[in-house]
Each structure stands twice: as C-alpha cells, then as structure tokens.
Image (tube, one colour):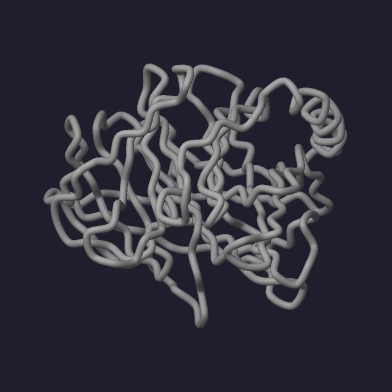
Length: 297
C-alpha cells in the first residue's frame, strides 16, 4: 500500500517543529552507570513507566519503575521472579490487560510478565518467530485493534551494509499465557540519521494511535561514546478486520529529531497525549529520559 504524499510533507513540518521544541524539554538523568541505563520503556500510567536494563549477569537489575511525572524523577528497581533473562532490550504493555507486559531479550526471547507492586513475575517465555542469521533485537511494539493484536520488532542492523529488518506478525495468547505469532512479514529499513559505520538502524519502535511507526536509531563508539541518535517517522502499520498486518515504510524517511551526545534506545508514545517518552543507554554515562511531541496525529 502506498503512503499519501502529504505524509512526507507532514514529516518535514513535524521535524522542524520538533527541533524547536527540543531545547524546552531537557534530558533528566535516571541512571549513573552502564548497569542502570534505559534500554526499553513501557508506559504504566499516572506519570510512571517501566524500563528494562540490558544487564547480563545474574543478580543485576532487569526491570525498574520510573516516575517521570515528578521532579526529580524517581527510579525503583523491581524484583524479577522467574527465569532470568540475558540482555533485555525492549518492553511493551499489553493493551487491555492491566499489569501485563512483554519484554524482549537481544537474542529474541519474549517474556510475558505480570507486574504487581515491586515484583515482576514471569508468566511464560518463548522465542520470536522467523529469527534470521545474526539478528540482534532491540525493539518491540504492539498494535491493538478491536480486540486483535499485532507485534512489530526489528533486527537492529549495523552500518551501511546491514539495514535493519522490520518484522510484523499477528499476535494471540494461549490460555496459559504464551505469546503466539502468526504469519511474519519483513521490510528492510535504513535510518537517515545517524549514518556512520556503527549505526543501529532500529534501536526501538513505538506506534501512534493513528498507526504511524516511530523508530529510534543510535550509534556509539564504545562504552564512553561519543554517542548519537535520532527518532524518525518510518511509515504506517495497520491491522485489518481479518487480522492481517499491513506495513508500509516511507521511501525517504525524515528524522523528527536528532540527539548528538546520547544513545536513544527507547521511544514510547504516552497514551492520551501527543508526547513520546525517550530513554537513553549512554553506557558509562548512565541513562536519561525526556519527552518530545512526536506522537500526535
């Protein structure tokens, strides 16, 4: 399906407006070292969100609660109850199921979580479908329409010779909670910015209420940086009455905003607002969050 020409024009206008807005919404620090950065975000409600850490050793924090509606922000580590993941990179609330989330590890394992208070209990876990050779996942998003679900995720890609591969599939849940994926479609995506050899073309995904696909992209030169990143309007996703997922990527995507000095690894549209909450994993420099007006329309 072809996207209307007005979408490209709108992207340019939004990028200009967003650039002007960036100075008014400063980054706020939420972590101070490589173990406490933000690798993925899921809105929880009432000015709070959950965020995952990409830690790999047993006993290190996997999931925390962020109070972004306070000044200063607050961070509360959660107890992980169940099989311990390695390198969590994304987390997403399951629409219509309060307290239920899906978290994704870099190698493609999906964990269904039930969060109550300060504990996250693993209900089930399963691999993503259609994992390709060398795939490394940093993103996951859900679309809900009339009680049906679709999932989007991506191999992050690397540099000019390996674009990201965006995957999409219908999603259902078994009676015991296991996520089940339907037929998978694939699209290649190359970030317009950053564009160096270390670029990860998709470091996270979020979907607006109207179905626009927002993608963060990032690059770094090691644990001490320098870092660079951007958020881009990448296209459109729809879910038909029969449960078919339709994805149309923009031929010439335009960044909505660029963030030199930070490695944006999380983008989350906040329900009921036009705002996106961004999170960074700046390795030894810790993690930061800010809101930007990217999710309206």
